[in-house]
Image (tube, rainbow, N blue to C red):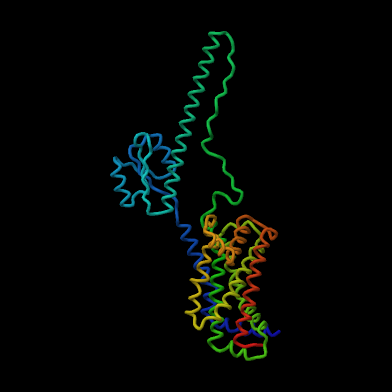
Length: 376
């Protein structure tokens, strides 16, 4: 009951703060929509310059990219310097000579991939022609041998040409997945974590700076009741914000969601709860909003690198260790497994258990901090 009283007062105070409400409900959706639009505007289309290529190579390359013909390599290089093309290819001494512009990482990778596919297709096509010619020659030799000996020769098996296009299937998702679909689970977890931390930290800091927290500490309320009351009061708005972000990403932006919708919401709410408890804790060590924001580069931003956006397979041991002690590692993994792989509760319960552990630890630390301000 004591916690409910504190929670009611927190809810009333937050509702009166229009800036906080706007920050909580509008800001994350706007940033997500902006990122969705930017990622959707990216393209792997490239322009490739060619210099005196055989016709068969040119035709195959045109199936992969836009092709522009230049009389010399210097002309192609000049066009590249003016950013008219992303790569150029010529053949010298029967060896392909490829020049990549190098200023745009995504374009570089796309150009190299398309040129490699073209050269691979050319090799397979040549092999196919050679095998067909060999097959005809063998048939002719068999016919001549049959005429000379009067016997039917043994059949010779000719190896078949490799298929030009392999059959590709996906265990999860399909070839139509966009870049944002792949990044969405990690981005969802990070934005929920970041905005909940920021809003809860700033709001709790206002409680301290306005003297409200001190007056609350002067009452006979237990530390656990005070912390729980603040947690419950802010958690109501956290629920609203988390549901809005999930609805926006999955239902409005149409990001692929293969798992249980309720389980996805559970992971997001646990992630938000960790951020809420951490925000309340760190705000206790800040005397102003500026000091609280100083924690962001130290505590929040580094977690981007552990949110599933980057491959850490070959990371140093100290990075791997940090990866095991930050909440977003477990949140992002669970979100990825639910959204992309369609995993169930049985598959992700260890992640949920770790996130619950973070909540308990931060909650106890909040009580410890309050004890220094007013022993009860």
